[in-house]
Length: 119
Image (cartoon, one colour):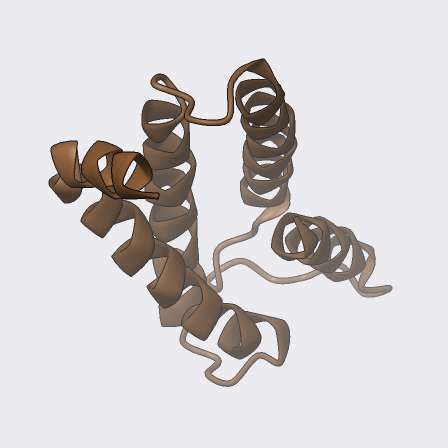
Protein backbone atom coordinates (compact mmCIF):
# COMPACT_ATOMS: atom_id res chain seq x y z
CA UNK A 1 0.00 0.00 0.00
CA UNK A 2 2.90 2.33 0.70
CA UNK A 3 4.15 1.82 -2.85
CA UNK A 4 0.78 2.95 -4.23
CA UNK A 5 0.83 6.07 -2.04
CA UNK A 6 4.37 6.84 -3.22
CA UNK A 7 3.35 6.41 -6.86
CA UNK A 8 0.43 8.84 -6.54
CA UNK A 9 2.57 11.29 -4.58
CA UNK A 10 5.14 11.27 -7.40
CA UNK A 11 2.65 13.06 -9.68
CA UNK A 12 0.60 14.92 -7.10
CA UNK A 13 -0.29 17.88 -9.34
CA UNK A 14 -1.79 15.61 -11.99
CA UNK A 15 -3.75 13.66 -9.38
CA UNK A 16 -4.97 16.90 -7.81
CA UNK A 17 -6.07 18.30 -11.20
CA UNK A 18 -7.92 15.08 -12.00
CA UNK A 19 -9.73 14.90 -8.66
CA UNK A 20 -10.73 18.57 -8.55
CA UNK A 21 -11.97 18.67 -12.16
CA UNK A 22 -13.86 15.37 -11.72
CA UNK A 23 -15.52 16.67 -8.56
CA UNK A 24 -16.57 19.87 -10.32
CA UNK A 25 -17.84 17.80 -13.29
CA UNK A 26 -19.98 15.65 -11.00
CA UNK A 27 -21.38 18.72 -9.22
CA UNK A 28 -22.22 20.54 -12.47
CA UNK A 29 -23.74 17.50 -14.24
CA UNK A 30 -27.12 17.56 -12.42
CA UNK A 31 -27.47 21.26 -13.20
CA UNK A 32 -27.08 20.47 -16.91
CA UNK A 33 -29.39 17.44 -16.88
CA UNK A 34 -32.17 19.21 -14.98
CA UNK A 35 -31.55 22.49 -16.84
CA UNK A 36 -31.18 24.56 -13.67
CA UNK A 37 -30.32 27.74 -15.53
CA UNK A 38 -31.41 28.73 -19.01
CA UNK A 39 -28.29 30.86 -19.58
CA UNK A 40 -26.19 27.88 -20.69
CA UNK A 41 -23.37 28.68 -18.26
CA UNK A 42 -23.35 25.18 -16.78
CA UNK A 43 -23.32 23.53 -20.20
CA UNK A 44 -20.39 25.69 -21.31
CA UNK A 45 -18.56 24.76 -18.11
CA UNK A 46 -19.29 21.03 -18.39
CA UNK A 47 -17.46 20.48 -21.70
CA UNK A 48 -14.06 21.87 -20.61
CA UNK A 49 -14.33 20.09 -17.25
CA UNK A 50 -15.00 16.80 -19.01
CA UNK A 51 -12.04 17.36 -21.33
CA UNK A 52 -9.72 18.00 -18.38
CA UNK A 53 -10.99 14.86 -16.63
CA UNK A 54 -10.42 12.79 -19.77
CA UNK A 55 -6.95 14.14 -20.53
CA UNK A 56 -5.74 13.75 -16.97
CA UNK A 57 -7.14 10.20 -16.85
CA UNK A 58 -5.09 9.31 -19.94
CA UNK A 59 -2.00 10.93 -18.44
CA UNK A 60 -2.44 9.11 -15.13
CA UNK A 61 -2.75 5.73 -16.88
CA UNK A 62 0.72 5.92 -18.43
CA UNK A 63 2.35 4.42 -15.34
CA UNK A 64 -0.53 1.98 -14.76
CA UNK A 65 -0.22 0.58 -11.25
CA UNK A 66 -2.64 -2.27 -11.99
CA UNK A 67 -0.78 -3.42 -15.08
CA UNK A 68 -2.32 -4.02 -18.48
CA UNK A 69 -5.80 -4.64 -17.03
CA UNK A 70 -5.97 -1.17 -15.53
CA UNK A 71 -4.44 0.45 -18.60
CA UNK A 72 -6.85 -1.26 -21.01
CA UNK A 73 -9.88 -0.41 -18.82
CA UNK A 74 -8.84 3.26 -18.60
CA UNK A 75 -8.18 3.46 -22.34
CA UNK A 76 -11.49 1.84 -23.26
CA UNK A 77 -13.83 3.63 -20.85
CA UNK A 78 -12.07 6.97 -21.16
CA UNK A 79 -12.29 6.75 -24.95
CA UNK A 80 -16.02 6.01 -24.73
CA UNK A 81 -16.44 8.95 -22.31
CA UNK A 82 -14.56 11.37 -24.58
CA UNK A 83 -16.40 10.11 -27.69
CA UNK A 84 -19.76 10.66 -25.98
CA UNK A 85 -18.66 14.08 -24.81
CA UNK A 86 -17.52 15.06 -28.31
CA UNK A 87 -20.79 13.75 -29.73
CA UNK A 88 -22.80 15.76 -27.18
CA UNK A 89 -20.76 18.85 -28.03
CA UNK A 90 -21.46 18.24 -31.73
CA UNK A 91 -25.21 18.12 -31.12
CA UNK A 92 -25.04 21.11 -28.78
CA UNK A 93 -26.82 24.16 -30.16
CA UNK A 94 -26.07 27.66 -28.86
CA UNK A 95 -28.91 29.27 -26.92
CA UNK A 96 -29.09 32.12 -29.44
CA UNK A 97 -30.32 29.75 -32.18
CA UNK A 98 -33.88 28.52 -32.23
CA UNK A 99 -34.75 24.88 -31.71
CA UNK A 100 -36.70 22.81 -34.20
CA UNK A 101 -40.46 22.76 -33.67
CA UNK A 102 -40.60 19.05 -32.87
CA UNK A 103 -37.73 19.29 -30.39
CA UNK A 104 -35.70 16.60 -32.18
CA UNK A 105 -32.40 18.41 -31.70
CA UNK A 106 -33.11 18.86 -28.01
CA UNK A 107 -33.83 15.13 -27.62
CA UNK A 108 -30.66 14.21 -29.55
CA UNK A 109 -28.53 16.54 -27.43
CA UNK A 110 -30.08 15.23 -24.22
CA UNK A 111 -29.45 11.62 -25.21
CA UNK A 112 -25.74 12.25 -25.84
CA UNK A 113 -25.34 14.38 -22.72
CA UNK A 114 -26.93 11.61 -20.66
CA UNK A 115 -24.65 9.02 -22.29
CA UNK A 116 -21.65 11.17 -21.52
CA UNK A 117 -22.67 11.49 -17.89
CA UNK A 118 -23.47 7.80 -17.53
CA UNK A 119 -19.86 6.85 -18.22
